[in-house]
Image (tube, rainbow, N blue to C red; front, side, top):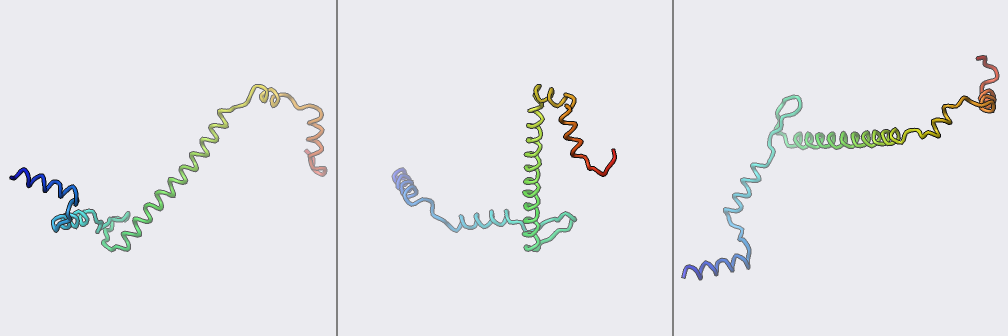
Amino acid sequence: MGNIARRRSRVQWLQNGEVASKYFFILLRVKHAAKRMNKLVQEDNMATEDEDIIIEEIHDFYLTLYTRNEEIREHEAKEKEIVRLIDMGVTDEENERISRAPGMEQLEWIATMLPKDKSL
């Protein structure tokens, strides 16, 4: 007889799911109270229990954290671009072109770009 009752109970449990009991709600309340932050030690080592100050401190912490992370990501992206450009390097052709002495045309052009009333 006990086996049949156990099966029936199991079938009812599968059909109806777990029934929320007073015990369940007490456990839920205890777990919630244990997770609740009701005291915070600030950077100046002062403890506070004021909920508004705790919320403000948490907000400021994450704002600073994510702002700093965004700045770091931007800086890393710039560094990667610089490294990419450095890795590209100068080709042999470019090196030869920039290593040559300037020609007469370039020197004349440079001379025309100099201010007329200034001496060297």
